[in-house]
Image (cartoon, rainbow, N blue to C red; front, side, top):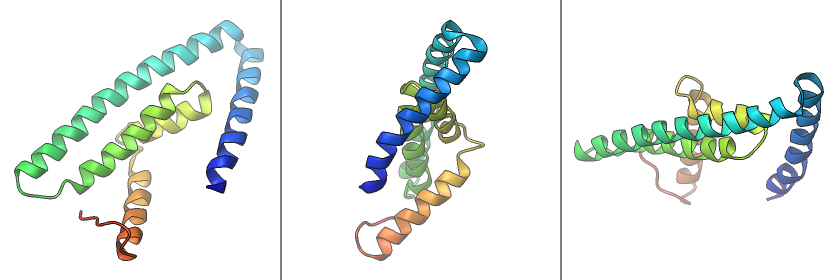
Length: 128
């Protein structure tokens, strides 16, 4: 809980600093345009990738397999979509890294490790 509170205080301050820095370089209207563009493009990409993860989960279930990997993909895409929807360049970078399939791998492994640790403690049940 402390980390979340700290992130909610520090992240907006970093975003404001990046806005001011970028506005000084490219101008404030370009910053606004970039924020709108990355938000719209990012949410569209997250939607596309989310539907693909949902399709993979359905196929796994239809084949009698647990949809573990597709669920982890879906969680990463969902969190990335939230980051992309929020205004800011730092959150956009994090969001694109979570949404794009070729950069999502390290986050998937961290999430899978977290889920396995929780399952080992008996907190949750996770099957891959």
